[in-house]
Structure formats: C-alpha cells, structure tokens
Image 1 (cartoon, rainbow, N blue to C red):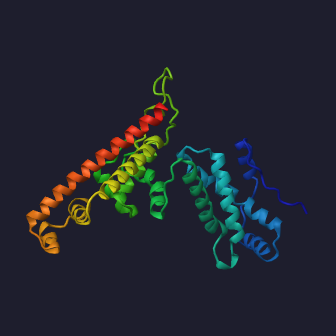
Image 2: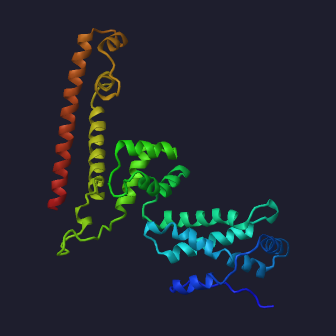
Image 3: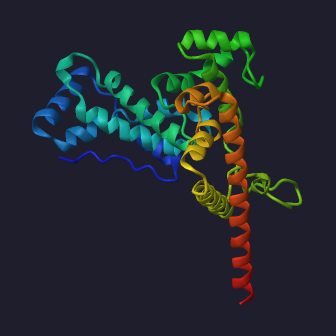
Length: 297
C-alpha cells in the first residue's frame, strides 16, 4: 500500500498550493477511522492523511492574516505546526470534527508567530491585548477609520467597549499598527547624511561622571567626619540634631535636654557650625597643598 506523502513548503508557493488541493476532503466516518488508528495504534500513515486533508484549512486561515505584512509562506508554515499539534491531540470520541478542533491550534500558532515577528518590541502580552491586536483592523473597517490615523475619542470608546479593553490600550495598539518599527540606522535625508540614532540622547550619566561624583561625595564625607571630630560632644550633638538630621530637633527640646536656655542652644549651634567650617577649609587646604607637592615631585 502506497503511503501518503505530505507536500513540502519551499519558495514555490504555487506548487505547494497545487499539491495541497490533491488531498481529498474526508468523510466523517473515514476521518474518525483514521483518528482512531492514530490514537490507538500510532499509525503514522493515518496521521499523514489527517494532516494532508486539512492543509487547505491552514492556507485559508493563514490568508486571513496576510494583512500584517508577513510572508504567506511563513504564516502557512506556522499554521502547519499548529495543525500537527491539533491532530496529535484530537480525540474522535468527543463527537466533533477535526477541523473544528484543529482550527484553534492553527490560529494560535499563527497569531503567536505574528506577535513575535511583527515588531521587535514585544506587544500583546495579555489575552485582552492579543484580542485587540487581531481585531482592531476589522473594527476600524466597520467604523470606516482604516486610513484615519489616530482614532477619535468616540471610536476609541466603541472599540474598547466591544473588546473589553482599556481605551489607552486601543490608542497605543492603533499607533503601533499604523507606524510599525523604524531602523535607528535609517538615513535622515535623501543624501544619506546622518542617521536617526545620531539624534538620540542618553540622559543618564556616563561612567566617568558617575565615578567622579562618587569620589567627590566620599571626599566631602571625609572632610565632614574629620571636621566633626574637632567639636566637643555637646557641640557635635547639637549641630547634628539641628542641621545634619533629616528631622531637625527644636531648640526647645534641646534646651530641656541640656538644662539651658533656647538662646544658649542657638549660640552653641552657630559656634559649632563656624568651627566646623574652619576645620573643613583647613583640612581641604592641607590636602590641596599635599596634592600639589606630589604633583611637583
């Protein structure tokens, strides 16, 4: 008995479509018999007949997704993957035809391929967003808004309500579909002078600036710590509580703590701050002179 040979999909799409039409449509009884043979006996020829008889279904479904700008060959190839999954998992005892079951696998495989290939930026991460992506074009056609660019607020509301998605998702997906991806290496003008990426600005600090800022912060921290050592315990505590803490302590609280007047606390604060400034300036001048000496050497 001659075994069934499935057609291969190469660059010759016309030849593939011709070979697909050679497979006969199966009667329900024949389809069930083949499905049972595959399920129970793992009869690979029965599997090939089931797959071959539904290849035209894949072509028909794939053509329905041709508006996304992807090669029909690739859509059919992905649909065939879904068909194979559907056929291998089909249970003839459930009482429905293979086409009814397999079409869901075919569509899922094609849609997943489109979402991965249509844009470098991932979209359609949730079920509702995928539903929006694959139904927006149809709904825009119903609203006569295919070539209108941005949708009107009324159109956005109608689409969002019908698909059960947010209006913000409708606006974003519509813009993504209308504009697609653009290469950063695309020329800015016809003379090909300059590229889009030349105009991109990185707002973050570069490594040299970050390192310089970190070193400056450490230097200032060392100066501050060294200056605070020049103060008495009371001066250091009052100055810290009044000027260096996130929540400043009031003069009243410190006056009660030390048993002195609020004016005396204020005087100690000013005195401590003046001493700290002088200590920091002196230390900084010493470090600068030391660095100059090392450079001269």
